[in-house]
Length: 435
Image (cartoon, rainbow, N blue to C red; front, side, top):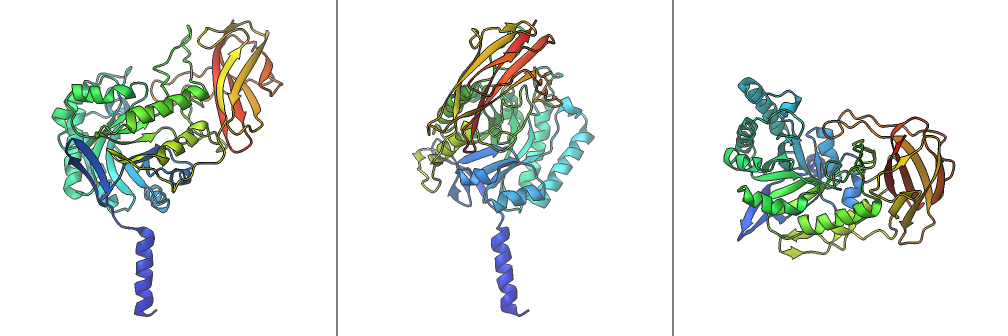
């Protein structure tokens, strides 16, 4: 092979592999600005590991993901950037932040990952752990976690000055932000997982002294811990329309608001399956890869995204889909309406009706299921088993059905799925009690 051929292959490999990016956070007046390779960048990201090709196709630009090379390679191949999660552990999982040896070993592991990964072209920012802070229902919180986070952040920046460092917190007991301000001066920004309380973040952060920028590292529908519940404790999941309205409002008001402190967000959950109270609560796709209305909504939101805090920029390169998903508006059981406690007699026959709209007037089809209520896990659905549908209770697949109530007493949910035949669906469910 001659020299010219070798040089050509080297250039080709560089073009395919890419180069290590430089990410900066700058302050211009009172506004914070994220720049990647000196270009303004507003995070339009997702949390998830499936259907990632659609992130780029629909105008997104970032994935919150792990540090494994195959994952980062995929991010690069798709032309996206990565918020890389680094493996810091919470005390609720057995970590002891009073144990200096354990903290040192964890920091060494983090630094080994950073050293081997920092020059990967997908890397945009680092996140030290996820919700290391106190979670309601867990053991008392140890504020020394923030000392360990700052120690790791300082060490990361010493070996990699090109990628900002954050840690990610939940929004319970936000007074912890004051501890982070005091104990973590070396983190560059804050990642915040926020749901129903997303609208009050700027005021809350100001109250506790956070003046640096932040990213909404996880957001979505109102959480099962935030919504109204039945008398037996079953939370009401938002309908397709309620979720659509909720996502749209949160994005416009709390994320794409030009406040100069929020640098973007990662929507949750860009996947077809996650059991957490229900199998439909957070998922933006179904198990077959069909898109909920939320996917098309994010396409719309990302296409008119802000690139700088003060200047909205239309993005005509990402044309909106010509066909939209149906949206479930309402679901009832007999005479009962939403937010009434629905108590049914075992073995009785009842009716249900779903209403749904479709902007394209596509003919709609329906699927119905009755599942036992899930046994809730203590945190994030971990270890939660998926209740299987009870067979033989529903024979119709129409907008109005009759169904037989399960013979066994207990808590259940009636699910309906509406399809347009164009790779879209929408869903809703209602909890009921069998006596």
